[in-house]
Image 1 (cartoon, helix red, strand yellow):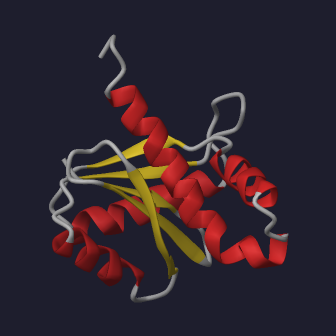
Image 2: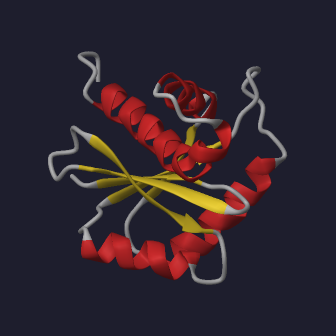
Length: 138
């Protein structure tokens, strides 16, 4: 099953896609968050035969929703109207922090990593989802 992960941001939307077997997560080029973003994501879903979408929901360490969660929920409603495959909100706590650390360790400065961090965060989100999906107790 091909799965798309989305890391929603007010300016940029990070994307990652699984392979057809749903095992490997690959970051994709980010999508600017503008009036065309839903159309671009819909086109990607159709072209790549995506069967399931996960959308990162920013939660606090306590598990309560962040202010940004309202914007993510609104985005999910609009996206659900545009596409036909199932969409699930998933906890994205610390994915951007993890992505930032990875890029820093690879030698990227904060200014050079800006265009990579959101899609890497989406890939981390997708990897976690795939690991839980294939965990022995599932």
